[in-house]
Image (cartoon, rainbow, N blue to C red):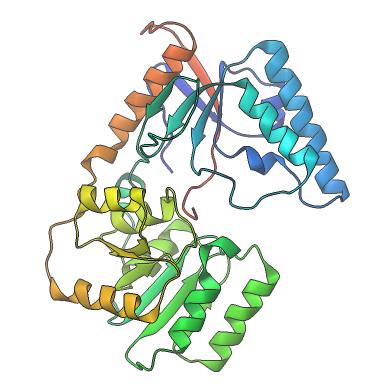
Length: 327
């Protein structure tokens, strides 16, 4: 993913050593839930202790926290008082919110800026594409329960079309879900998978080999995965929400197809037929997500938080930002 940098901004991607002992002017937070351990094992306790140390460091040094909101609520609730408390402490230290999509109903006393998720044309544009396979339907990204991959597998197996195939690409975070996928593939030759983290070059070939990317999420607010597919000129089928309707209006009807959750076979087949009707559509309109615009908007936020809009001010931002491909 392209970093948000410029002549007077140095982006330092997250490491515990740098977060706790390094120098930076702003801490840019994306997913506070990653600081919350699962269960009560040694790793979870160590993560909790590190998170508390980081919170203390940010508080003592008065380091401003900027947070980018990717979702309304965490996808995987940790369900512990200590975990929820850690997330709330990061929220209390936050001085500025960046929203990826319009959120007119969100009640916040903090200053906010709408900065759309940047497209992936810049980082992926140089990578070779695959050859389109007629009938290929692809899901990609982290395989997590809320994404509805289990439902997609079940409904696909019920479709009596030998000209169609389903490809699932990504690392599972749930062993039972992974087993459901592998079992289905053993019983249905039309289903194949690559259940691991996939390098960018391989991911580009996987996506561009399909006619349609299907994201059968049970809920969707913003999605990096949707933008990856659109950046590679691959139509998507996504839940019908306020934000996905806005995305369809932005990029073009041919590229964004909607379904009312839960996904059903008819919606999947209808989207595929609509994709096939228009053989040579104009590319998705992603100009508003150009990274130069995204960089300039982030720089404006950083300057505001540091007090001033001084164009000559050097800024270091410790960016707690991982890959957004699987969201």
